Length: 178
Ligand code: FES
Ligand code: FES
Image 1 (cartoon, rainbow, N blue to C red):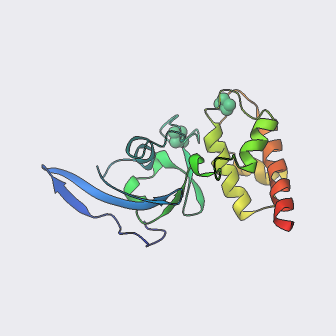
Image 2: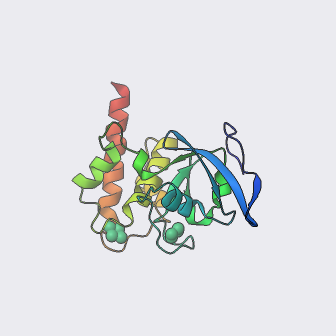
Image 3: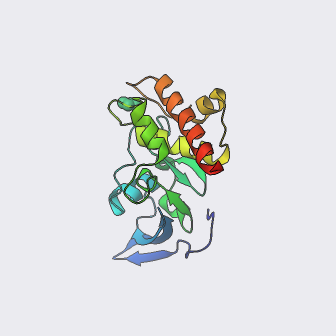
């Protein structure tokens, strides 16, 4: 399913008898293109083909949210999406949140609020939070809870995470009014 059509969509290709599809898309602002196994998940495409290891693999079944990325403006579990479905799309991963070697406001607030311990859930939490603030810059606590409902954290507890997202939303709104 192509969200955008700037790039060529996937097409079949036989290489030594093995089916391959070409996936061309934009990841963190950079155009990428690879021939891959048609059954490869978007999660494995990011981690194994592009070496973007920030996106984590937890359950692999759409239950934990560790693999959350933003695809075409929406937070999705990348373990449940075929890489070829992302052909032509814009993808944002945790590596693309900061700018010019600086952490994003969301990342800074997660650190300030001690909103992580082991950090395994954190990339997915950040991406769900980013998608929320992009569509709703002034979220209520209930909105935040709903946005991260699919992201499981086993060690931090949700209160500091919710506080970090709320403070980040305030800082982003202040910055946009300057
Ligand atoms: S690894 Fe994708 S939801 Fe758990
Ligand atoms: S910080 Fe460890 S699972 Fe969330």
